[in-house]
Image (cartoon, rainbow, N blue to C red; front, side):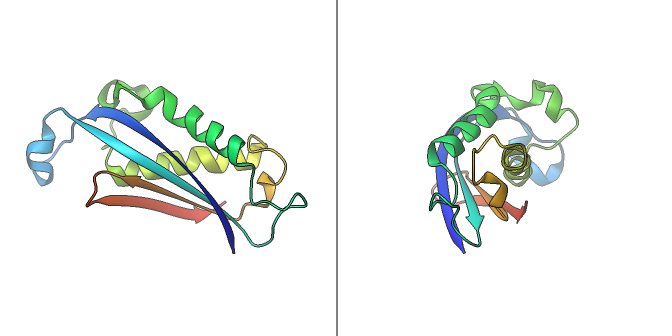
Length: 132
């Protein structure tokens, strides 16, 4: 299996509901380092998994509307707990859509799996991975 990974980051604010979250029930900030890996069984006819520039552009387009935002106030997250795990799936869905719709350019249609990792700190991360 071949893979290409791109990285970016976002700075957000959010809060959680429920005793499980302790002090995180209050509004707090987080800086997430976001890694997205694209997997193919075989390389494209151009010898790549996916164009790295287009993959990075797709990630930036997904993260841009979230950067420097309070996620509690964004309509796409209404009623959701924007945990690290939840956000990794949200980003996965956008990246999978980019692969399916051609936003990743030639070769994107051959991507069979994507893994999205959100690094919450140097000691904690969460991810979602799945088939495209």
